[in-house]
Length: 368
Ligand code: NAD
Image 1 (cartoon, protein in one colour):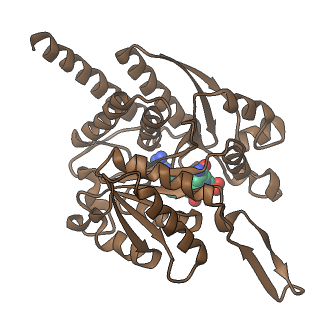
Image 2 (cartoon, rainbow, N blue to C red):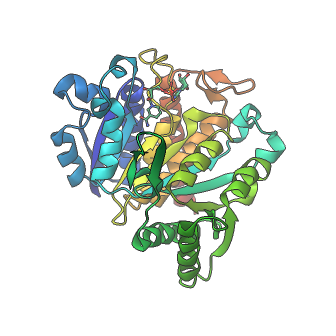
């Protein structure tokens, strides 16, 4: 299979960890007989320096033609004093909006060797495996009017959703739950908000098409508590934009390792943008010590959700798990009795685990 992948390395450690993702993807391609063609384009501060804008037309055009997009991170001190509309973050918000990427997926999974670094007790967080699906292009962040009124003595923000916007994200959540443990928690504030009551109606209606998926409705305040008291009880969580923003950040600290978390922003035809949850980490950029695993796991998500390469995605995730169990870790992760390595060595370790597994699989099938 020949796939066109756009790379948007961006700023800070973005460039370093993108090299890691490329190396891992090329390894997977050669193990599985695929061909990935990579095209790099500018975004964020890098694009401001080169073209005077955080999202050049050339980048947008390339992304519109792509099978999938991988993004490193954007931002840094150098661009902080610029006016709001030409800040690096506008590149990221702009491309999500241009491509209509309405579903944000954040898998949160604990890795056994890292659980001691979680702010929660190990026995509480052990076994957590959650997928948060957040609506990304509607709701309170986009509704108009959003302004000061009455000479600045009052303010209004608007929570606006079309029913169709709710239907498509809820459908995505049911489909995703079907591929996992078939349990969907829909989070809303239906005791207060009319938008949440419509949301609940949509979820109940859609659930008839997915009788194999168990649905649970939970108020957002209860969900926020449960995420830290009983995270293992969740499988897939679906919620609207504002609640999703807050809950996904709350959940991202459960595993105690920001550098490990991938994310995806996708639309119905499968096109998606994949990026680690962390930022450009300017404090460690250029030092060769950035943790590439969040980026590598984002590449795995890309294979699963945009390129229908489930087995290949599993292989990358297993290789990452194996590396951690072998004690490899970057400086941001604390692993007891581990072996601290830099970005390149960590990437090599992942690649080594992918190729070793392929060799042992082929030996098994030869003797089967
Ligand atoms: P950050 O995520 O970049 O860094 C927070 C801390 O975590 C830092 O100490 C950093 O060194 C560390 N860290 C993050 N990723 C790491 C990795 N892969 N390996 C090792 N250590 C890692 O957040 P910040 O410092 O608040 O923001 C820095 C810049 O990134 C800002 O300009 C911000 O706007 C931007 N940002 C971008 C994105 C994005 O591109 N999606 C997200 C968040 C922040």
